[in-house]
Image: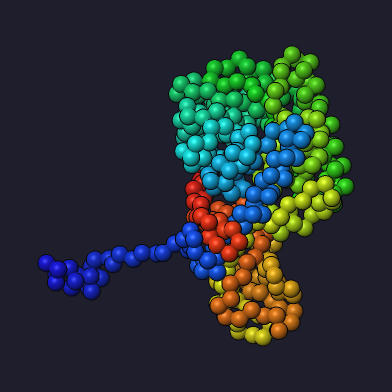
Length: 388
């Protein structure tokens, strides 16, 4: 029998079992991490968590970090353990691993349309406190019917457009009408409003962000005034983000902020003017290996678009002055050196700061958490690819 199995395997009739070793194991040296891998510097990461948590608490504002930034339950659990009120998710399916990991306060900061999504939402709402966004009466009625039909309930936040020009109602009257409708329907309850403007986060000038935030704040107050005149209490105003956090917490309109990238930083956020009021460290890196040095001023890395996003710029090396990433292909990235004397050699491992952390996380199954020169843990990015 064994001889028959051997002949079948040699003939390709029986697939051979292969074991792909993990990129790293706890306790090993950081230099031994296989590449390409996402690496999280725990000292910088924990420092960033404390900085944002203290900022929020100092102003009496809750912090509800956006899990779409990392899609990793272990990271969310550490944010909540430090004082975060809960987390945000952007999609219903994305929330599943977080509920499974024990997170019990989740805001899905998006509109939800479609019976399969509503059915899954009802399942989650029986396990955790869930709030969702609405900006249309038809969607709100469908949400109500689905929750009531499945014996569940969710909190509703009316999504208001404060300049993003994406989702959200356009007038205070629309907001009042939706809030009143939510109060009258089963399975839902009016909780407040979401006023998010992602475009403000990336304005390069600190003064530009301040002025834009002031404009958004004035608009939010118009919605709050309209709700008050209608006799509708609005306990939650959620929104804001990493780039505008210092203004959001001081605005006196937000009850919670949805910052996400602050925990990691990327080249896009790193390039804006932060002033002296707030500072975060780069904690997330893409680790790659030099796989080719075909010219005196060029090195080729073993990662590409399947390991990092590039829509906000290519990842950039740290600790290598005069060396920059100039192109990202499917499976290769090209580093260009200003001086050939500073070109890495074949086999060198290089840390690079991602251009945009959110989609980069979504390309990896796990992140390697390191402290100093040692691997401390490997955390699963359990919500990667869950975009329904």
